[in-house]
Image 1 (cartoon, rainbow, N blue to C red):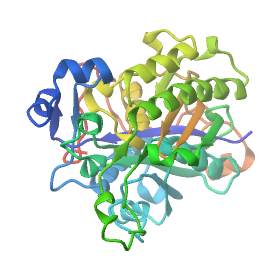
Image 2: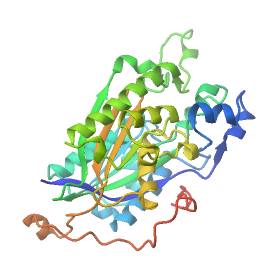
Image 3: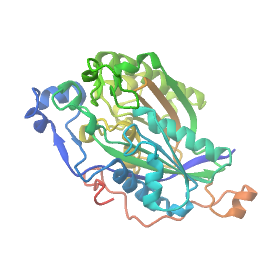
Image 4: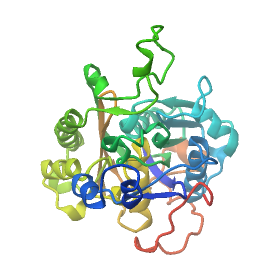
Length: 368
């Protein structure tokens, strides 16, 4: 059976760090208050020269280097974002313009669930044989839509981008199962009023439509705790695996309490759950690919590891998938692919030893 292995990964975050102490000087809050309720200690936020495009491009170039490929090798670019730099022109086209090549390009909007949705879509293009190599990017710059007088939301979000390269393989690698869901009736629990083509004509209503993120925290929390655990469990079952087969859970990095609830649903110990929201906050569609990058670069992912990805977000939408890590069976020789023969692991760009998590260089848009 033809599958889509993850052969390259990249990430980028802005250089600017906003700590809990910084926020305590802006709104009525404290480091203890934020940490105890969310698990977040700091987040990266875009500066005047940063953009959704610059972060995406830095992550994309790094993913290509990890895969040992160039932009000319990519057949399709799928970008998951709810904060594109332009209307009309897709964010994926803006990325393609910067990295080069002639890949098809389109965007997908599913907020914080977007990367898993995009991974499912990109994998289908490879699995069906329409494309050999697909790049999937999750990126958001939500801090540009955060009200920094509202402590219920400004403490949560950060900016960033993550990217992966998918390649065809004859081995059971990549996305083995997918769970996608939505409850559109709850969209007003997490949205940006007025951020779109519709603006009410009534001047009396217009002040309500400020381009700031609005969140009903209690409703979102209840929704997330329920769907994260259920979706993750369903993804495991659909892959014909058990909880004992799961080597790692990579959840959307929104809130530590929500992550803990999902881990309990899968009966996973904390050491099998990837957590980095303490350093980045909620980076929306970027949170899972950033976590994939860090887990891979710190040597925590091994060939044939079973990794559950699960996310929730605006829509309200949710998504989960079971990924089998590794590149076995990936073949770059057209004749090999035509014959359906297994190949050796693809040639890699030399990168030295995997850095330790404590000293790993954090890629930024400036150095990506």
